[in-house]
Length: 177
Image 1 (cartoon, rainbow, N blue to C red):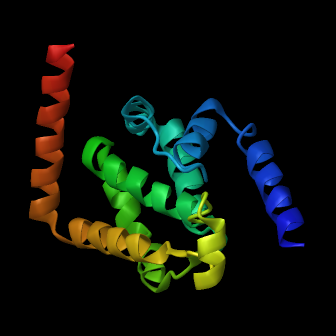
Image 2 (image 1 turned 120 degrees about the vertical axis):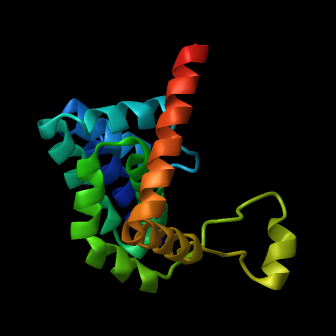
């Protein structure tokens, strides 16, 4: 039964990734449930889009929705936090304001807890059967990253320094290209 539910969830996520505007699809791609990170190119495009009012609403709307995903989709939540941190550094000032307005959602993630039972499926099945399944607690990274974001937006001086440094790095990378 869990297998069927898992396939159903995967299909719903795949269908959802094709819906919405181009920018909404890009945010969904960057925060997918896949086991790999999104590219910096994609993150840069999303950060640049936050300077446009319509795109900003699309990006942040999807991002806050994905931060509210259930525990079984912990990767989506974690990647959404990573993208939010990136946007705080490289996105428009409106991202900072919006994040301050949504601190309650970030504080709720301080209690996030989940165990991913699928983690660790590998060739050592017989040995693992003796010890029990290997599980990964996905909530710790979410709790830590949400706290880092809260700390950053509450410290205006540090946030300004981080954003200035990020802009310098971005200009430097642009010059090198």
